[in-house]
Length: 221
Image 1: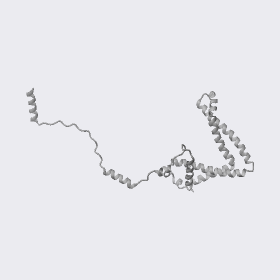
Image 2: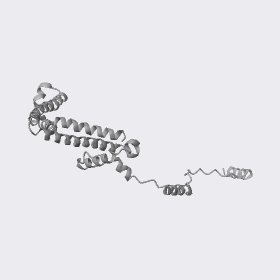
Image 3: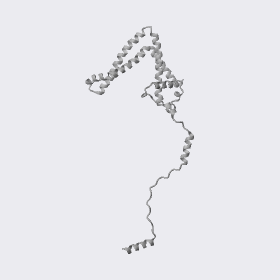
Image 4: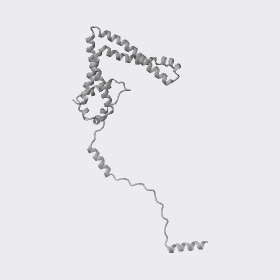
């Protein structure tokens, strides 16, 4: 195993152990608390903004208070409520089941997070540009499979194009075709550069003819 394999195993194991210690109910309700706080902030933003604006008189600070304050207060309240529920389950006969489900949840969460990290990497770094220890990792095929699964469930606005697919779609180099193009370019003569026409030189007359022309012109005057 190389560093990537060890890092993936360590991260997933820590996520599973942490979830096992806290229990499935507490882990699930913590996610519910965060999502609930975000939803409350979304719907309570306008009323809170209207109530705080006359007191602050600063639009930017008012928005920060309306968003940050509402989210933090909602998260604290929901965390307290979910904590009561989690403690009641921990003290009941369902505690072993709760811990076992928490362990499974931790494994799934860790796998999803490392797959998400690989999805971000695969969207910006092509396989040929990655270090050898990353390409040769035994966990790389599983990470790629998890990244593909996440890519299918993401909304279209959040989907990231795979750099691997872009590299595979790029046409492979053809030495014969490139050599043929080079030979054609050498065989085709270059067109001569266009030159502007030069003015014609005035006609030159012998000396005796010039004298005769001068004499005729003088007689006509």
